[in-house]
Each structure stands twice: as structure tokens, then as C-alpha cells.
Image (cartoon, rainbow, N blue to C red):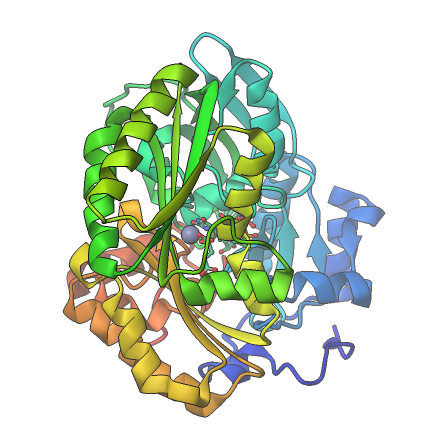
Length: 489
Ligand code: FAD
Ligand code: 2HG
Ligand code: ZN
């Protein structure tokens, strides 16, 4: 198959742009392979059209570019199984792709790997209104599942800015965090069961719906956060949460990061069981969404902002608690300014200021994106440090994130990708996080872009065991090669 020629010439192929990487010895897709895929999936679901391929070869950030010549769209787990079994016997590499909203270059090919999209695996299999357990195929869109859950007064236990396009399978494969992890925990807790198709085509059934099940090793956890390298997730069983009927959001302005930290602590203490989000944004992040997207701040400009969300079952009770908390914080001078709302349209507008930062940053041009866990006492130091280090060589250096979970999103932007700026940022930024015993990827995963820094967050023995597990489950290494595990030992 010939390489695609229709890409934006300005964007270099990922294999050249970031770290030089050599194509492994996989076979190339030939006409017989395409005919086999057509026999299993039907003509329309084996796509070789250049324009459609350009989309799946490029990531959401428009920083990664592969050259796959084939997109496969199976409609059920047994088709996934047949296709993988064939690819494994032919040694054809495969990249699983859900909504392609991943931010670490994991969902797109590096070279000419086949893209296997889960978008047609989109059936909701069951929803038990009593237990709140939802079973579905992995290509269901998160927002569609949440809308379905809402019909039963239930709610998906995770929520994120990409909910309108990300798939639940992609969420599980990346162990996505999002804005309510503080309340509902991560997916290792909410995913009760799953089915995955292994590289050799075997369907591994772990689709239990028991909340408690201590029978042997809990294998499903291997696939939560495995980023498409151990198997293709085809079904999941999710524990939904009860849908709160009262939501309130407070948008606060603060003078210092020290006061931000005081507010996290007092919000956790005072709002306790009704606190469902505790998010942070600095002024540069807010300048980005106001300037680049035309959004409006509900309060005056301040160096720092927090968005607190409460949710519960009694609006009166929640509002009273939140008002008390805000009054105390104003009176003590910890919070300078703030506004509180329970009105759905205003809540939506306030959330947009936080959730659309990633989109706003792209309007600057190129975005160098970091997603780290750091001790709260150091949370903002990384931003100020990078600002000093990079000075005017970047357009913007901003910090925001899931403060309540210790998860900072550090973003630096420039008009175009600049290898000299990149060399100033990496490995420096990861080494600082490593020195603080943080995580170099809090919630987005390692994908292609971060895999060579895994040793800063995991021990050598843990990495070796990961490599052994990979060899056991995918001996030919056909599943999402060049991702997650480091390219050197
Ligand atoms: P993709 O991007 O298609 O794939 C991601 C990875 O999972 C790839 O390695 C892919 O190979 C693998 N994969 C996908 N589907 C499967 C499958 N069925 N089986 C096996 N492997 C699979 N992440 C957070 O954690 N928290 C956030 O708050 C958050 N907010 C975001 C906001 C925006 C605007 C955007 C664009 C992204 C955000 N993300 C966030 C990042 C992203 O990880 C999530 O959007 C989501 O979990 C990815 O799902 P997806 O279906 O798009 O997966
Ligand atoms: C968010 O929390 C996402 O908005 C994206 O995880 C973070 O763009 C980012 O850096
Ligand atoms: Zn996030």
C-alpha cells in the first residue's frame, strides 16, 4: 500500500518530529489482506479513501501524523476477533481507535499500522435501574451513555470535556479521570467487568457485573489504562452513580496560590460529601478562553481562579452549605471575589470556561501539553518555573487542572512546533516531576509521546514485568506498537 500524500506538508510524520523511531518488522498490507477484511466486515467497512484516512491518521491536537492506508470498522466483537486473529498470523500491526480524543499520541499510527475503529461497536446491552449497572459495547459515546443513564436518574461516574466524542472503550483504555474523579474515584473502581479481544483473536470474557468478586487475579484491571497495547476492549460493565438532582457551581477569584490551597482544604472540610469537583485555573488559562474563544468571565480578573461544584439530593441543604462556606472564606479574606449559581444555563457557562481551555489553547498554534500529578505544595511551582525558563520563546505558559486530585495540566503554546523550545521543555519538565515523586502522566496515559519517561514514575522491576506481560499477551507485538512501553531498556 502506498503512503498517503494528502497531509498538510507543514506537519512532519510523528516518527520524525518527536523522537526518531524505526519501523518494526511488520508486514505491509496487500490487496489479499484488504480482500480478506472486506469478506469479514463488508466492503463499506474497509476504508482506503485518502480523505477519510487523513482524519484517523491525525490526532486531536494535530501534532501526530501517521500513514495508515487502511481503516477497519467492525460491528461486533466476533468481527474484531476474526480481524485480529488474521492480523496476528500475518504480523500486521493494528492501532485501536475510539473517539480519537487522546492527548498523548496513542490513538493514531506512527507508521502504516492498520487503524481499527470501535465506532460501530455502539450497542447498549443492558441497564439495571436497581443496581445502576450499565453494560455496553466499547464504541458507545460517553455522552450518549450518560443521556441513557439519565432516563433512570443515574449518571456515568466519569465526565470530561471530550464527552461528546470519546468512547467508553477509549475512556477505559486510558483510565480517564476527568472532572468528577474527586467524588466517584477512578475507573478501576467503577468498571465491574469487561471483554477484551487479545492479539491472537481470543475473546477474553471478564464481563461480570458483581460489585464484589475476589476470585483470583482481577484481570480486567490489566486492561484499564493499557492504551490498546494488551487487547481491544469490546464490552464494558460500568457502575453508574445515582444522578444528583441539585447542582451548584461557585466560580472564585483568588490573589495567591497559598490561598488556593487554603480553599481546597476548607472546601473539602466544609462541603465534604456534596463536593463533586474542585478545579483550578490560572489567569493565563482564562485569558486564553476569553481571547481565543470569546467566552466571558463571570467575575473580575484575578491571578487564580477556582471552580467548585457541589451536587446532592437537596438543593436547599446544598445551597445553605455552600453559602456558609463562601461567607467564611470571604470574611477571612482567603477568597477575593466569587459568584454562585444553581441555574443550569449559568452552570454550563461556568463549566465552559474550564472545560474549553484545551480547545482555546489550540488556537495559539502548537500546544506542548503536560499532565502531571505533583504534591499540592508544589502544584504551581512547575508553572512559574517553566515561565521563567521559557520566557518569550512561548506564546503562553499556563496551569490549570483537577486540583482536588493533585493533577496539574501544564500547557505551553507557540505559533508552530519549535524543536529548540521542545528541547528546553523535555526532559526537564519530567525530571522535575520525577524529583518530587509525582506522576509524569496523571490521567492522559503515556501513548507515544511520554513512553520514554515511564522510568521517572515506575521502578525498573515494574517496567520489566509490564514488558513480560506485553510479550505474553501479544507475542508478535502487533497491538499499538511504539506506545506505552519505552523504546529503549
Ligand atoms: P482514543 O483517543 O481513540 O484512544 C485513546 C487510547 O486508547 C489509544 O491508545 C487507543 O489505542 C486506545 N483505545 C481506544 N479504544 C480502545 C479500545 N476499545 N480497546 C483498547 N484500546 C483502545 N482525559 C482525562 O483523563 N480527563 C479529562 O478530563 C480529559 N479531558 C479531555 C478534554 C478534551 C477536550 C480532550 C480532547 C481530551 C480529554 N481527555 C481527558 C483525553 C482522552 O484520554 C479522553 O478524551 C478519552 O479517554 C479518550 O477516549 P477516546 O475514545 O477518544 O480514545
Ligand atoms: C482537561 O482536564 C483535560 O481539560 C485536558 O484533561 C487537559 O488540555 C489539557 O491539558
Ligand atoms: Zn484533565
